[in-house]
Image (cartoon, rainbow, N blue to C red):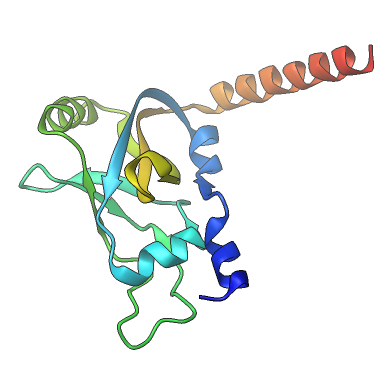
Length: 161
């Protein structure tokens, strides 16, 4: 591997779903592993993935799946390259799966991916932070924007002081 190729994979991967932070209130968060194909991890390490409009669901076997997550095709891949928007299995414990599936059945609650990252403690494996979330109403979104703006103003005032 050339020096520039090594540098390409050394970048810190931190793919966030900012839209989810705006649309939902997070009740509980869990770190989950993800089952990937060979070229998918390479694309994720390059930062070419998106969690926008993706969501999680349980199938009939009580397995958690990630749907509509976009992982771009690897540029140096061959005919063995992966599909960009395929469903990917998430790995959580059975205890977490039981409690999460019961909570997600309640009206107005869903499971959304919040952040995708490479965990150095597990030798560079890809992990996803998922959240049990409740949808915000329009006035909740406005209130959050007001709070964020007030916080920014306070930070600016303190910084300029």
